[in-house]
Image 1: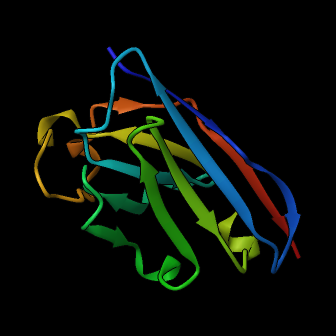
Image 2: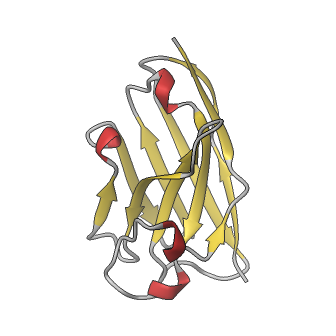
Length: 128
């Protein structure tokens, strides 16, 4: 079993930066593609970014391109999301997820059903 714990969220002003971390335990996720998702109040959970297990492939939702960067350190069993130029519209709970079904495949999945393990989320609030 895999446990994912997100950290790094908080309250910031528009234009600020935050770096989210997702630490995995229970089983190494170094061979799993990973993703960051977010869910704002009253909205569906949406993909933010995804990264393949060995990092060459990444995927970003259109509104995050150029502002957010996903990365991973497999030696630390940790995935990161660097968020720059934050906007009030980025306010949401951010979730980390792991895709066991694509273990060791060079895929950065972007559909919610492709993810098997989820963290509890970390709140990001951006004030205007």
